[in-house]
Length: 213
Image (cartoon, rainbow, N blue to C red; front, side):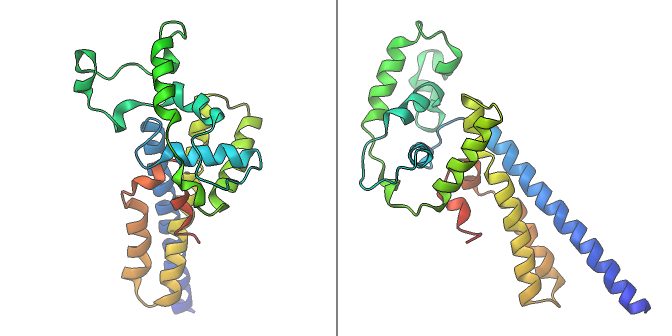
């Protein structure tokens, strides 16, 4: 009886530890997803373009340019930090985001930004549909909660928060199933997953579903 109680106690502590690791991973992804500006250099603009298409039940069938609806989001909310150095701007500083400026004041910048982005070809159009269908449904839910503008963009990114928590738990379950006698692996695998600095989870990106699948 004492041995059985000890095993139960250890198992309970282990589950609490894994739960804390899931929370830590979710918190890390939440903070970095909120901190990084849009649209990052891991093709976030292209993935968002596909999300907008799937939100209208439109499945891409060719490598087209970014849609007009996508440009309506990218132009005001895109940030130059991922593409340019601060020295390339006046006074060596990044300019304020366009969405924070009066529309009439930044009209020339809006026109030039739109022209620059409108020529980009979405080569991600051949990617599997699962992430885009899920993200578009998640986006729809956020809109019905009253999230608009840049808030709804962050909401799409925050889809990665529960996903990374699920990955940590899946890593634990997998390690426990394969090597139930190895505590170092049962704890080490989810520990690594919880703190692995993988920036793909800080943006809209279809690769976030790869570990789960």
